[in-house]
Amino acid sequence: MRARVTSKGGTTERGIAALEDAHVREAIAAAVDAATRRATEMGDLLGRDD
Image (cartoon, rainbow, N blue to C red; front, side, top):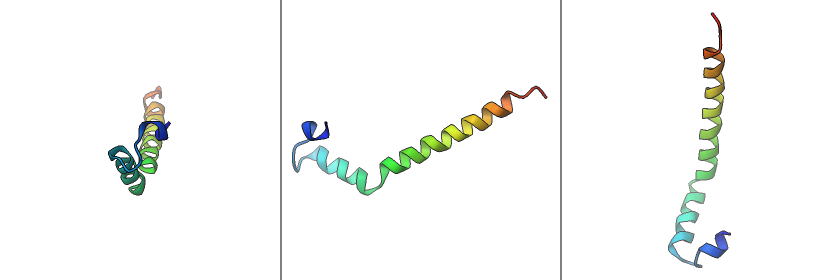
């Protein structure tokens, strides 16, 4: 799909390359994972009948 929406050497291609160089995909995945783990922890804490 990306090949269909980017022009070779264009602005979108350069922007995507910069994001890839900065490992943004991995950073977003790590953020989602951390938030998911914390949501589970909070659910466990709030679900207690202490």
